[in-house]
Length: 177
Figure 1 (cartoon, one colour):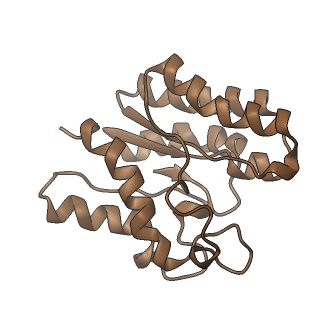
Figure 2 (spheres, rainbow, N blue to C red):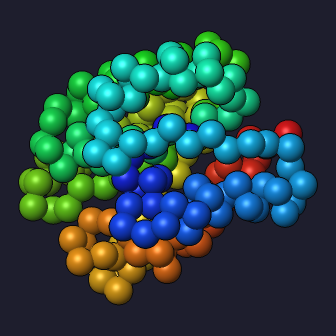
Figure 3 (tube, rainbow, N blue to C red):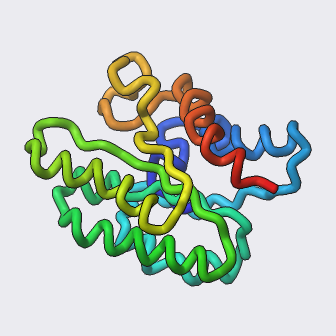
């Protein structure tokens, strides 16, 4: 699992985050996987590229969940550069023998329609190009519900974590052997 604050349980106990809930679900369903969460709050896709090689060598994953790009967008960074970085992470993961699940994000409309559209389509284009599984928008099931977000309106609450897990699980489950 390589991601940003959405995967580090930002604002509450890590054991209550969706990644910890995923580990519990794998155990409960007797699926022989260990979750290695190398996510960092504030991480951008370029940070992910810098760390992916060492993370792959250390964890030797069968599946890599890539949940990055949100901080690139919030900082207004180049969508083309983000796509290139995510492509590198996907390529390195696949070269290491891992199946990949790409988890997408969307930008709010105040970033402008062109930027938001390019950002949104980046994840779909990458998933198609690399034949990866895709969660188009990690916050899909509750993005319009302010009660599911912390006061910053960026980070989901603890109550939203099971919803995130369900979104991810639908696309992850077929990748698990």
